[in-house]
Image (cartoon, rainbow, N blue to C red; front, top):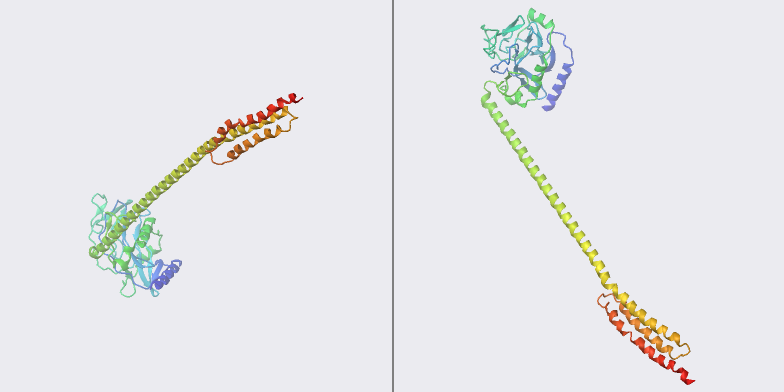
Length: 395
């Protein structure tokens, strides 16, 4: 079914490319007849000089949709609006676009109401560049309007929205209407185009959704589909109001969900920021502890060196003193071979001191300082030197 509609919509676009050759300005065609016209009350006219343009059924890919009637500022002074209409011909329903002109042309005999009874326009007229409103049909015109009058209009109530075909209106254009169709015409204004575009994008205005009773049947100004200027179709209070309430509830739920989502996202961001700050703090604390440990190790290392360093100096001193004295004494008695042997014996004592110097433990290091008093063995080497002094007596 959706594929069929797509094909039909493409055919409509093809028809749009065909230029109009007669008063029936064909813009699109379809094989399904449009629904009956919507019954509604005319909204308030926003200001003097605006003219009423009745609502009608448009067509798009999803089917027929209602284009709400609205008050429109004409493109220029002195022109009137000829509504568009659906007409049957060549096996299809074609939409004949409305237009602005000095005279009202043929609009298929469709009774749109509010002065558009099927032939001509009885809702007002231009005089001295001022538009006079017939308040009998223009119920939306306020009492503050200066140019008004009241003239009874007989209205043959019918809601058929198309001309020709099965069940359609059997009306043909008059000579005057033919002339108006061939006279200079102005297409719909930008405001009117906006009204149609907005309606085509509103799901609630689809005939398949509102069943001929749209919640927005008419507006005070083009494109304004909300507010006090919106009028619903008659009989739309039961079915469509429920739909409106459902839509409002759905919208409220969506907004609530969006708010909850935003709150959750904010909380997650805050939590992530707190975790990041905690991680950074932990990293800084860890770095500080590591730095403190390194500094402590650096401070302890020189202390160890200071403890172990004096040991070699004391030992070296103990080693140098005994070695120096034995070497100096034998130099005086070169002729005595026996005295030289005792002089070398004290040199073995410093070897013990060097053994203590190589020990890695810092505690034994002070022991070489105690070994210093053991230097008296060097005096023993001096005693054998006494016989050397008596050698002259042998002579």
